[in-house]
Image (cartoon, rainbow, N blue to C red; front, side, top):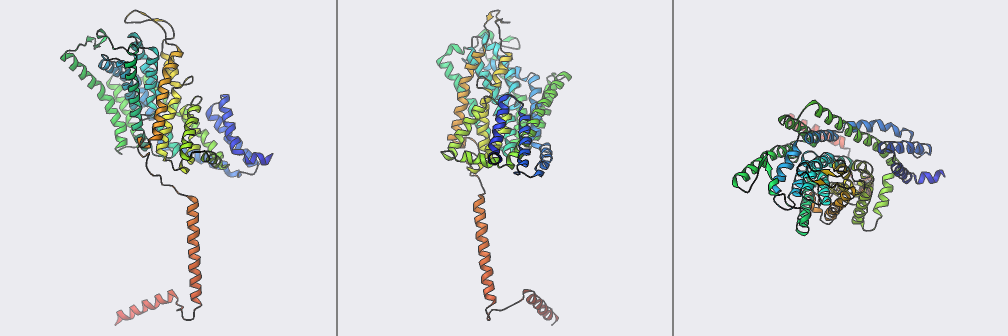
Length: 525
């Protein structure tokens, strides 16, 4: 029995973790408990040295010293301050008036503002809740189909998962051992492509089912309480207001992403500047007060502690899992799949998609990604490209029914009962959870389509087609053995020459002393 456990301790350890998670035990404590329990089992069976756990304090201190993780509270704080400073309301109102006259205009405005909020906040909850509170009543008031309106708002909010400064990319960079700036740069193209796909979907709906996405009536187009018409003066007033509203978020985007891409600041420094910039914007808008500041700091501390506890738990788990050769078991399991690297990518993405029904992106990043990274390296897959691919796939964890967090965020602000519209006075039907689920499905399919495109066309991600420099341990050992054989042969030949009576038996030190003496005599002459 002991031999059976010793031979299969890695799969037993992983299976125990899965059982803990399915039961609903907290992820951080599940990881830590499995790591500590199986370390004791391994020590008792003689598989692991008793000194193994002495490395654990050093690993935890290493987590505390990781500067990259500081970007998480900085970007979270920035997003929460911006979400409460009224920026989303101004953007949605102004961009909605700009696109209002065309079919699907409000949906285009939501997608555009969702991308803007993603590039400034990086927090899904803030984007979905803000747009759900502001845009959903307006879209329902003017006759938008409830499924389309719900899907557009939820999907646009999840753009914060892939558009820098995404928290997902920060965590993935840490787990993959890559630069955050490289993942930001690599994700930029797929993020723009995904945004374009959302716009294309709304365009198709406006052509096929125009009654689902009607244009805003002319009477509803107002700016600052004054009506807008097609006249030159009204249009110039609208364009001027659009430019004025767009300047602060665009300046903040450059302050954060521009400095990172130009190499002026690290992601951590960019997050710190973004947090200061968000505070300045809130002060200029006269929205900053102690209540707002306390709420933002409290939420930031909660999220940071959540991430830190999961990271400490995953460190305990990975220490024991690596000691029992768990990565070799996973590598043997996945490298043996048919199809080589392509088969690995297909299976891994299916696995991530299924696990995303039950786990959020933090849990996936800390549990699954460290197991997949060594296999990806062994198969010659660039880790920056692999990280962006996983980030796009993990985005579905916020969208697919029935456990998508973005759907829950939208459900929390969508009307659950019949209500009276504040502007028109009409009785409005509620938005059901079934309508939210059905509205999300097309966007999940769009996200999966992007995953397939990234696999088929790696150049969509910068560095995706870059040749990966790998060290083949077997080749290195073979080369070392060849070099050693050559040295041994040279020594043997030298020894044979030393037995040749005609060979000069010279002492190098003696020759050097004679040379120095000759030079001294020559200089004395």
